[in-house]
Amino acid sequence: MEKVKFGIIGAGNMGTGHFRSFMSNLIKNGECVAIADLLPEKLEEKKKIAQELNPEAGKKVQYFNSGDELIESGCCDAVIIAVPHYDHPTFAIKAMKKGMHALVEKPAGVYTLQVQEMLDESKKHPELKLGIMFNQRTNPHFKKMKQLIADGELGEITRLNWIITNWYRTQRYYDTGGWRATWKGEGGGVLYNQAPHNIDLFQWIPDMMPNKVHAFCHFGKWHNIEVEDDVTAYFEYPNGATGVFITTTGDAPGTNRFEICGDRGKLVYEGDKLTFVKTDVSIKEYTYTTESTFSPPAMQNIEVKVEGDNPQHVGILNNFANAILDIEPLYAPASDGIKGVTLANAMLLSGWTGETVELPLDGKKFYDMLQQHIKDSKFVKVTAEDTGTADLSSTYNSK
Image (tube, rainbow, N blue to C red):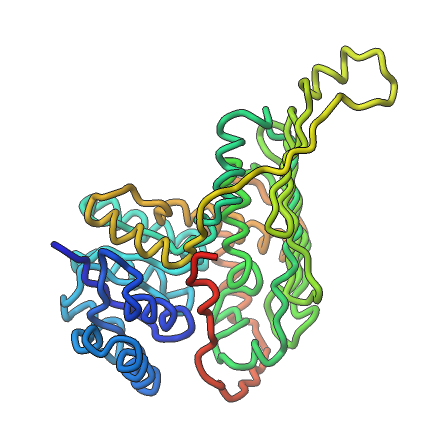
């Protein structure tokens, strides 16, 4: 095939952003030939966007009233799944059974059991690509952090701390979607909507998964919602390292500071700057050999030069099309997605029970507790009028 024919399932905020990328010819080896949504007004909006941005490309687009109709039509080589979280694995499985590649939005799913089902189906179709929209992996700062750690510049990792509290949301944000911030509709709050990218990077950059998780989850602390909007989590790792992850949608101004400490120094990402405080010797070795009682080892404060653009969603879309055409490997395979869902599930499970959760996660225990929360929910969702599709264009450029 010369170009990969894409269909988009879900014409909300994310689906609209992807549609605009295609209509703006930002995906070199891909074209959008179909889009589906349950709401006719969403499809009418896309017709106007196509007419505005690229009437010629818009003529190729077919419009469907459901994702099932789009998949059954067989008009696409690949689908982009941008629907509420519970349906990410569902549509991916249906697409693969129809012989289509699938790119799912984050998170990979709500609970690990359904994500594993999706991955098991993928193994039956080795000729198909299954990816996930982890667009933060294209950020050159995060790529550089991963490279420095892989190259051994930090030595053995000893501590990870990420305060990521610049996800502020208003009450109106939560009120403009009937499914949003409910156990039944979304499956969780900040851990499943805003912070999945950070949770992914928390394990992807150091290439480490914890073996113990203890989290304090506050449900509806800052908003009239039933799910978590404030989380502080503590992690322990098999090598003895520890980690702290703090996130919320209630802070303004918020903070975005990520520290990774090792035996040879510390990496700090904050304010779109990356700093490497590098020690001249191993900290562990220095601690037991120095004659000094207080002085730390000599160290250098290095502002790391980071090169390259940050294509975000467009970068993942281009990579996915290229991977299908065997031009380059898949940058964010969906098999990585289960790691982030595992961490989110573990944090919620610890928050619900007040206990430390050990990994591997008991997926059945989490699923049963989630179903119980859905069953026991007395929350009455107040829905405000949706004022239209949000402008997410800033996440689609190279800055």
